[in-house]
Length: 68
Image (cartoon, rainbow, N blue to C red; front, side, top):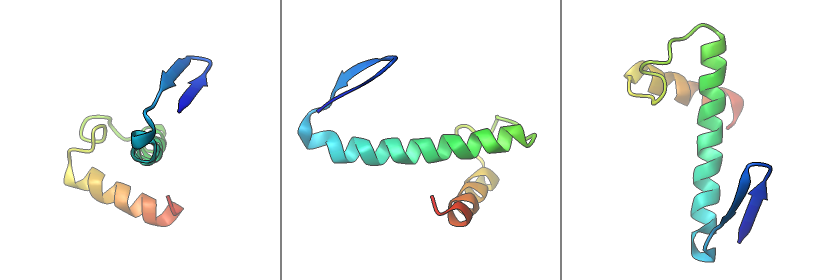
């Protein structure tokens, strides 16, 4: 599969397409969560990557609330 946008083009072997699509969706959701948290005043350390138990719990709650 060939995927491209304004930043570039990549070729994804067909046997990896589902895995990469799932991982990309997950990463996009996490980055949306982080963006919301930082805009609300949260510190990035411990949040991105989510290394603290609080960040992990907050992310799980956010996913539940937003359905993502």
